[in-house]
Length: 403
Image (cartoon, rainbow, N blue to C red; front, side):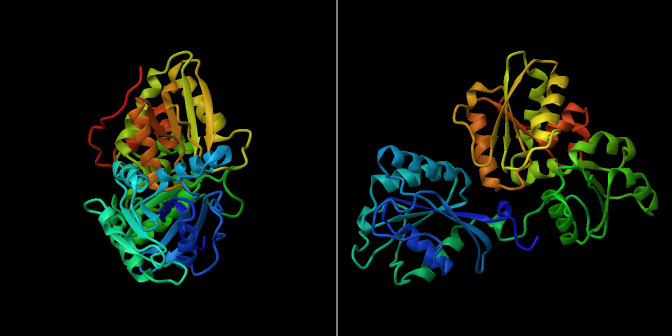
């Protein structure tokens, strides 16, 4: 890995009507022609993503969206695709020309309901000066000419001021659970789903986080864990395992040593751990005929024993004793009609950001549908979830239930 993964980058979305200059703004910020620019409305048809270093913030992802006022059959599809990005946005930039109208205010209210800060940009100020009288109370707009680069520094400072504090420091995965100078054991099985010559992303990021916390990290496969523990002079402060090896690892690690899984760590880093814990318990309440949604935030080639498509459904059926059916969603796809599901099983979300996962949890909660992630579901099915949650200060969760 040579750069910060998108899942841990601040996501900045550029929204507005067609031909407001959204793509020109992105090209100005990026210092290169990232998006196609044309005087013809509707030039941007699909969301354009650009990962870059936004000084002094650090690694970010810019998302340039199609105009939300697009028209016609194809235009409606473009606008719908652009709206899907709202769930991933940490800071929203609303670009308008001259006057702030009902369209912009409705969009701002949507982001406010999601808890997303907004930066307002009055673009093309050279031909359409900002009408401040149209701005609602509490909204200040930056007058810009993105073609000439005017207002760029003011825009940069506004984005930095709006960015959530959690992106100022490196993301925390496990280092707050263990004291500096302690030992962390990372159990990393090498199976068919592990990339050739590499570790999977959560394992790499957990290792880096342990080092950032000034911990000593011991990395081993499950068949070398017993010897690794025996070689240590003092017990490790924490053992982290791949979910698929939970049962074997739990039988080896003494009860007095804290044990959890990479996916459980990610349930906290990417979402609401308490809600995920409650969602796992819903497996026991499944009934014949219930539908379960399996959501993967990435797309990959599936093996015959794929964890999300094969192993996890088999575990859920065995644990619940119910004849349930499974639907699958990949990447940024996530159904609108969640209320037809009894349970949602989400992957560890290593390839997406925290805002997207929290948005999905909020949607599930509003629909009254329980939601958990792969690792917590596996731990629950194996009777190990209580132990996997012991390292965390977990308040009693409150959220949706089903059944």
